[in-house]
Amino acid sequence: MCNKMLGMDIVGVANAIRRFAFNESPQAESDASPTHVQHWFLSYIWTHQDLDVSQRDLEAKFQIRRSTATEILKAMERKNFIIRETSVDDKRVKNIHLTKLGASICEASQKKIDEVERKISQNITKEEVEMFYKVLDKIKVNIESI
Image (cartoon, rainbow, N blue to C red; front, side, top):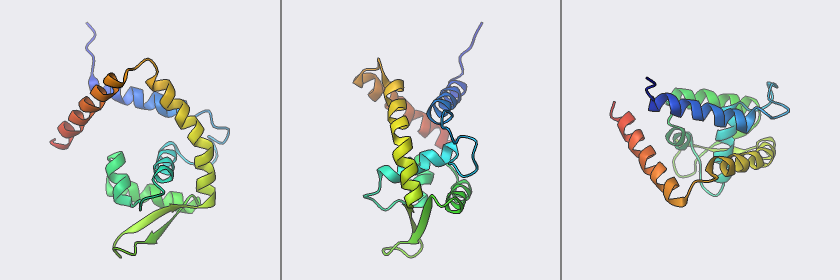
């Protein structure tokens, strides 16, 4: 008897999406290129350029710990993908901005991300997508209550 495990299936799908989205990059093995997570961070920052994006925003979006976000952002700064500048509204907050290199990576990878979005949502109705997000939100709440 084969028992399905929701968590394992979610991890498996996430890994498949990550491989599809970024492993075909010609620079996939380079230390100067973004990691999978850095690609997603860059994409988030790029698509929210009209807002002030902070580390806390990334922590919330990607559901990661502060220490994890700090290390990822430090690595991105070392690779010259981003800069962090003190917010004019709150001196305790640093807003994250793309460098020219970071923006050029986003422009190149956004086509792939758009392709991934089209591929994973094909043959899925708007109603099914809405239901998926409802279920996903419930899973998030369940995890947060652990």
